[in-house]
Image (cartoon, rainbow, N blue to C red; front, side, top):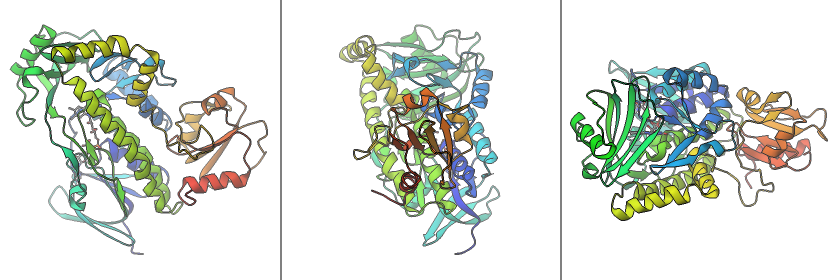
Length: 497
Ligand SMILES: Cc1cc2nc3c(=O)[nH]c(=O)nc-3n(C[C@H](O)[C@H](O)[C@H](O)COP(=O)(O)OP(=O)(O)OC[C@H]3O[C@@H](n4cnc5c(N)ncnc54)[C@H](O)[C@@H]3O)c2cc1C
């Protein structure tokens, strides 16, 4: 094999690329991230959803995310959320240590994720733009340009295209991007106000459109606006402050004296997806694989969840601890999840963009009659929060197999503390567990007498938990070493059923 500069080269240091890099590097892969920007990207996403909060917690990162959010605004936890622009979703009823959306600008989220990637050992090179790559039997050769326009060549085992909606990696590979172009547009503005916006999230709608407003830092309020009269304005048409004020007056009844903004964007509902996420030595992740209307603020969050799924697999494959076949499971697990997300976003858009009398009546009905029904609330919360994702298969023997793991007690420690420094975790109830076990080196064992453990894992006596906090295999009775080893081998791609 030729000498390589890295095990994994990641193109793009946004939320997806930084997370993949961190996850692969923390398991020992040599990772280089090439990011074309030297400065910050525009803020865009404003919230982190509960499942991503659980995953960040499982890496010991919640403290710094909460501190950053607190600096940004005191009431940074949002326990009541929106679906298709309708209010009243009860995140506070979620069974989680994080039953809320965390308000944080994407710029800060990206800083924190890149810092984590660097601490985990990844090298982030800024001002370097990917141009093309070639792939052969034992690796990839990546060609890029540095900030001075000089050619940079890198040889690596694997390539990840995390370069966003207009992905050059995807285009270079010729991967189809199927769907439709923008039909409707909306406007987001981080407006400077001369007074602090005291209320938390506020929504207004009428025949003129819909607005969601929430404080986004000191004396800055984010207004997300769908104006009935302007929803077919092309995406490329610049947003004017007068247009924003007009919409605020027509929908909110007040323009709040907005004259300046930190950021404005007109964005569309283009709806496109790649038919697969991984082939050979190249994976695509995040918005390189799909674009959709940013309904309910879940886009970045599903990107980060993809990255958690791919990152540990790359880490183990690159270090020789798992076969390359493990990477195919990234596609097998995430593509169906993303198809569902896309279908749900399409449905939300139908409801969201309709301001006819019938459309407004339907919104009222869903908001006041359906969302308050606990079962409906639970379904919608699961979809947005990411808790609805399960890798459980029909032939899985235990109901907990493939399900998510959140925070839970494990003996005198917490799951998140153990997970932060581990790859796989074998959690076992004390009764019946052997004193010692011979386990694969990537498995950390914890024996616990805590009752909370059994509740989290559908009464299981033991569970092997993957690095991305999903159960690989659970057992009702204490498993033998051989059973654990077989479950581990299957989870890392050796023994596929
Ligand atoms: C107006 C708006 C509001 C949104 N609101 C929300 C929200 O509230 N909640 C939410 O969850 N999501 C939201 N989103 C979606 C969210 O912004 C994206 O899902 C997220 O940025 C995708 O992350 P990514 O890392 O996949 O791609 P990106 O963030 O696009 O990152 C790609 C990175 O790759 C780099 N890059 C590109 N080409 C190259 C190259 N050739 N070489 C090297 N580097 C390259 C780019 O500079 C960039 O840093 C919103 C989006 C928009 C447009």
